[in-house]
Length: 105
Image (tube, rainbow, N blue to C red):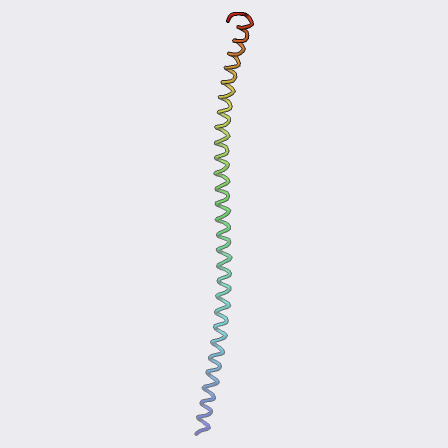
């Protein structure tokens, strides 16, 4: 009877060790799986962030190009007006000089 009790105790201890070992293996597997999933999630987040950064950069470039074209258009118009005014004044200056040479003024 004592032998049966000792055997039962030893069997229970063996089962407890097996259960503990299995739990440790399962815990290690879960940790490894969680690390892989975390790395994958991180890679996905980095890809999304990179795509968003690229999109924002392209938007900024397009906006800058549009603004550049707008400023260039304004500058060209201002230059055209200045040239037109200069031409008008040049014509006036030539008439003035001709009049002075001709003695009309």
